[in-house]
Amino acid sequence: MPCQAGELIGSKCLDCDEVSIPQREICPVCHSHEIEIENFSGKGELVAYTVISVPPVKMAEAGYDSKNPIVSGSLNW
Image (tube, rainbow, N blue to C red; front, side, top):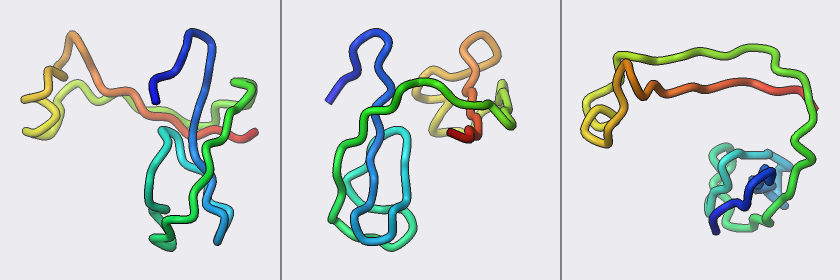
C-alpha cells in the first residue's frame, strides 16, 4: 500500500510488538505473520542516520548511487 504525502506507515507485530518501517508482511524478529498496519505521526527524534553512496550490487542495479544515495535512520518516538 503506497503512502500519501505526509504519511508514515509501518507495521506492528501482534506477537512480539516489533515495529517496522517500511511495513512488512512477516515480522523480522519472530517471523510471525500476525501483523497490523500502523500509521505514525511522523514526529520523533532522529538518533542516528547514515548515507550510503556506494551501494551493494543489487541496490546499484536498482538505481542507487552517489547521486541517488540510500539513507537510513533510527528514530525514538
